Length: 453
Image (cartoon, rainbow, N blue to C red; front, side, top):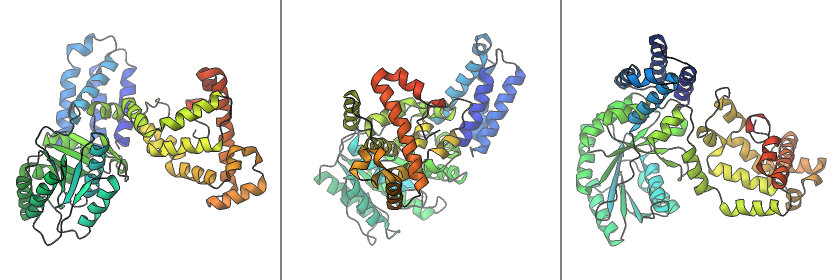
């Protein structure tokens, strides 16, 4: 998400940072670049105008003119205004109420509410240790109730059964009663998708909200919805007392304009962002971190949090002990590293959160280190015998042919993996003997692992 915007704004920021002093011409040119970048990212025109005006007002102030590095000071102003535009602070779910706390999801058809309900349930169960119940009040889409029931089982949430011949308000009444009897901490209500121009359906969701007594009412919006999302957000904001926004399909949207527009138009914080199809692919939205990411400064804090959550400490410590004892790095170890990388969303997701130097093209890195490539490498290793994984030098021509056939790939793919493994093995050997300094000297240019350049 935000790739296009990041590219344009990062370039503007780099150009500014090198300036010893700012002139009217510098500021005007930079603001023009920022304006074009925002418009190309599908940010609503009124939002762009107010954003640019706020930057201009601060840029002509004394702080910039008196600064020793005016270019950096202006980049700082752009960053601060982006943070403000995105919502200033992260707003977590409010649990300060008598259980069950009701979270109601509303939005357009196809926005991803049902999947978001399951992702949110998993997050609340895993991170906040809450007992969560899911209920579907969508009586118009035949598969919606069954889909939510299946997802509830997958994420370990309770499920309140409902049927298409019930009234949505009756479903909510029964779900509240069942949630109390089951001692659920949170009840997530998935409502039917509706067009914002359908008055009858908008009245229905307002009635469901009133009956549920929802403490949190989240507007679920597709990141790729474009300008229509702004109109929908306005209509839903008038019909319901929205408390936040959830952006879905953020991994498929290179523009990100919807995030900036909807936040500004509704005045409600973006709470979460869906970044993949898996049930754990829901990120908390931190405005400051996202602003840094948009300006190409990376998001190391989120990366560290993900490593703590998703990287197996047991496997990492086992590998460290193994290397310390002088036992070699083998293909099973490489497979573990690749699988842990996939658990974190692949190399592309890692690159999104790292500060990338100005002379490096992030898109090119992602193309060369995509998830499909990692999956192929894991398939090749899985096609080997335990002995071959432990002693890769025993893999001769006939074994390569068998391994390639087992993985459904070519012999060249096997050769490429073995070459990459040999380079990594040398690196690990240096690391075990002389620590990080030797390892860094052994790394290829750019600091990327072999095979990932």
